[in-house]
Amino acid sequence: MTIKITPNDKGNPAGKLAEAELHFGHGDGPLEGLKLMGFSVWERRDGNGRNVTFPARSYVVNGDRRSFALLRPLTDVTAQNTLRELILEAFAEYEERAAIAS
Image (cartoon, rainbow, N blue to C red; front, side, top):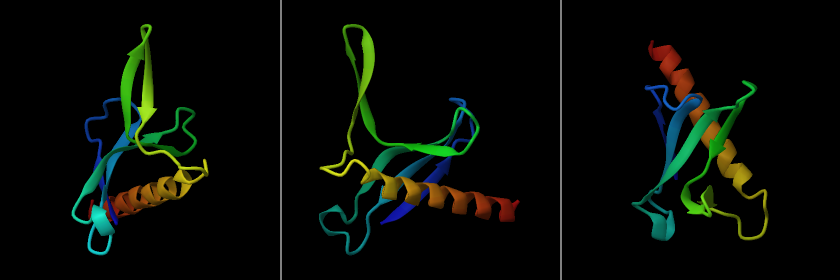
């Protein structure tokens, strides 16, 4: 699996730094040749670090907008942390390469 980072050059919405996709390659079983989209890297509102949001579907109940996470842990609620850290590492590497190129 590789992580593809696409920067948010438009600056809209505010705080969104990039989008991320997971690309599945040789040896990734039935996911080989597919990609999973919908991840975003955000600057934390307090300006102290970064966060990753996962793919979700929004819906409305009684006028309230809610979201349904499409990628959820089976049992261990910390299971997403590893993927979140991998995406943040890929974004940091992207930033380093962009800084060297400019």
